[in-house]
Amino acid sequence: MSSNVKALSRQVHTVVNHRRIFTVLATLTATLAATAGILLLLEGQPVTSAGPYLLNLSNVRQNWSSLIQPAVELQNRRWNYIIVYQSGKLSGNAAAISEGKDIGGLIKPLGAGNMIQGAEFHFVVDNANNEIGKPDGYVQQGLAWREQLSSAPYFSWPYISPHHQIAYANAVGVCVIGDINRANYSSYQVHSLLALVRTLQRRLNIPDSCVKFQWEIQGRPTARERAFSREFHHLLRH
Image 1 (cartoon, one colour):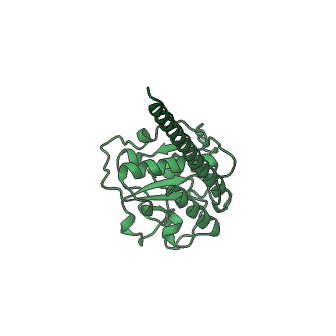
Image 2 (image 1 turned 120 degrees about the vertical axis):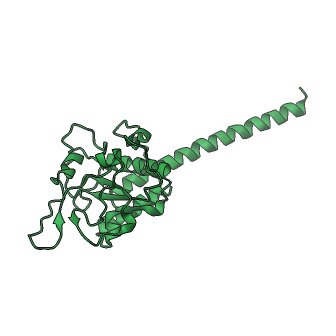
Image 3 (image 1 turned 60 degrees about the vertical axis):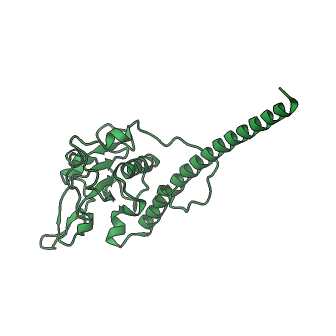
């Protein structure tokens, strides 16, 4: 091999190594940014930098593709939105919500207009106080998703309102156990919510603009709700 060929070979090898290093660093930076975004989101602070820490925020071993597979044929062209609700209580699970036991502790007197009822959400993101022996961040698939039925079709839940918006009738309903106004969601819950929403988006071809929080649709979010949804949408786009 001539000296010129050897020199060229060394140059190519150096370029390849540099590209590999760049790829690894870029991947690490993106991971750090996403992790820091979740942590800052939980603190209600804006995402400004990646930060020095890399944490494994996964607390559950769930196959997300299998989780969103229903018992019947998936009606992937039917679902056009993903709406994220919160239970309003700091403990609970899918069964308790469907039975009307965990509806945020909201009580309205008789004759006040709207009624309160439980809901069969498509998915429920548990916290550590789920009372079913599952880890913090565990995602339950509801009967409505298994059977591909409409669920939480009114953004006014837990109240039944005749003024619900038809545009959201075929939305995938995801409920996070908790109340962001009283306590932050756990990092495990946020990690699972992000993974679930992204998996649903890919499978159902739902754009980021069609991922909504209930309080965004209602139009009167609190400062904490507004901060959380803003940072969550930021993470979805990155």
